[in-house]
Image (tube, helix red, strand yellow):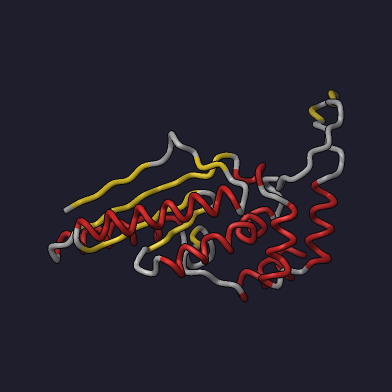
Length: 193
């Protein structure tokens, strides 16, 4: 109930063009849009480039302090956030058939599978991604959970400059402000002329 009443309502009031994997903006639409943009660039004689960064263990690395900061900044319900973070901080154990593990306490994570986890991940990343969009408006940014894709079209030189600048800025803010780890083995850039 709270997912629909609070988190979904907050997402509807704070839309971003770059979020995909949600109602009306499927992951398939994201992929096709990126492919069509690249084909269009080639058709009109321009270059196109895309870079993809993946945030390693994104749900595990979300800072609760950053969530509270962004909740105030973007109007997320603080009472609900405090309740969710309190439940995330409780002792946990795994029960499988008749076997129970020792309990553990973990601080500073989101629980993947929680009905609010994806919304809270968006909340934690929104400030950093908004700054990238403001600074690099010609970049087409697309985010599916913890994967961020940057796309640019234009001359080969401008595509290289824009993608390099946008990716560097995103990596800086995602690592320094959001405390994320950008997965180096999964980083990739492709281009076409």
